[in-house]
Image (cartoon, rainbow, N blue to C red):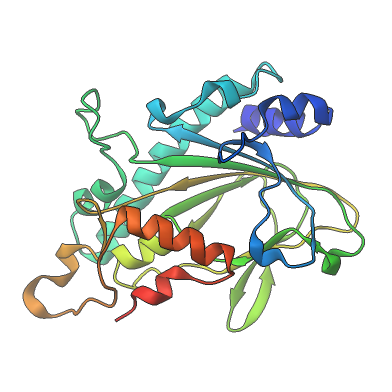
Amino acid sequence: MQQMKDSAAQFFGLPLESKNSVAVRDGGFQGFGHHVNASSGDKIDWAENMFLFTEPVQDRDMDLWPANPPTFRHALDSYSVEISNLARRLLGFMATDLGVSQEALQGAFFGGGDADDDTGRQPKQQCTAMHYYPPCRHPEKVLGSLPHTDTLGLTVLMQVDDTPGLQIKRGGRWIPLRPLLGAVVVIVGDILDVLTNGTYVSVEHRVVPDAERGRTSVVMFHEASVQGFVTPLPELLTGGEARPRYRSIGTLEYRKGSSRALAQGRRFVDTLRM
């Protein structure tokens, strides 16, 4: 964890010219940039971001993995494996709580169909976002991270420093999360909400820039599906005791719908409710 924290902090501390050597290409998603949403309105984008696909390994674009600092690539490669293992364990605990087999829930996230992945341990998709929010004395005028739920399945967030800013919405109120440097924050995303048929609910959250200190985080998102669909786990619906709370949708259609809704400041998962 510490090497990943150090590498992320060192990368964002580089001159802009150096960071732009791995900038997002036209029409692309991976790389360094600002990634402004259409829903940001007139607010100033106040974050530097780095987005990279980390798993499966064949999805990596190594030309966009920074060579500076020298530790970055190894740190991210190692950390992605650590978080994959953590995600698998967490999903196992959730499956037990739901009363379904661990294989059912873990299988929605792992086993990408790669011929070399005969153990089913490779994530279907894991992408990494690194964010740096500079200090700002007028947070109401800038965009840190707008209120949103994560559109994928399971999010694992590691804060690099002890600067506050992450908030979750509960009971109509925004509640600050105090940073714990030896811990990670686990966030339920929209796909996990659907998979568990609403038992685990996706969490609305945001980031508010701090007036005095910058804030850096490393966030890993995990996608999931059941035979190519975003749908409640079949094991939860057997026996006729439970009815699906969400309609099924193909993974590609879900991705497109989520992207459009996110750009408009809406939750696509709400359109799937039955």
